[in-house]
Length: 163
Image (cartoon, rainbow, N blue to C red):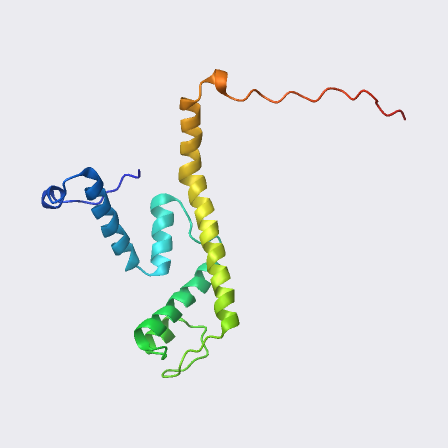
């Protein structure tokens, strides 16, 4: 588990009967706080604090940030372009008051893109946090006598080729 500088009051601690409930509360609070950050800030925060990048390329972050802004425009403004969208998506050709329209091909392509981002992030996170734990636990749990022996070289061929 990662150590955090986050503070929890005695009052909050005493509200929960078990350690599991307290951890669930702290986790939920942290996730909620992260959800209010912008994608760029969240990405920088995770890289700075935990050494894990959400996006392997800057252009992927830019692309995902546009998708977040499109989502926000649809959810919060019925898909009508507002000044906030124009300020955050400088590459848009849309004008203030126009409707954002997305065709099926675009949505499918961006869904695949996001799936690849998640897959990459998952792999980097596993490599950073889980694989070292597994290696450590295998070393301490499996006695040396039960570990796989090193592979022996293959015996020489019975019929060597002659030149």
